[in-house]
Image (cartoon, rainbow, N blue to C red; front, side):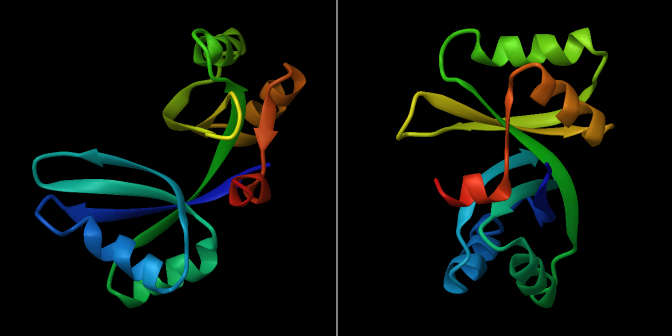
Length: 143
């Protein structure tokens, strides 16, 4: 079970982050989680949104280069060691994490972790077989 993530390059200047977020908001597309990585010149905005296909279309029409990536989201306990337990499973199975980011569900005591793996299918199977709940796009939309 993978989730589609949108990634766009942004100039590292005032207002650059606001523009794509406003574009999505005006179209009624909800940003459900995101990560921003930056350098001195540019940033990479990674987004999971309520309608990735429409989001990609709108961003491309606005001139952004949009990359669609499959990521895996999992649910872990929001407590000390919740992240460490998931990472140990991945390490024990020699699975490399390319990048990750997380967010907490306010209605529960669970945290969501979003991972990008070199071998997404294998990582998904290992996590699920180890008792880690793999989250679907509809699960995230329901938050």
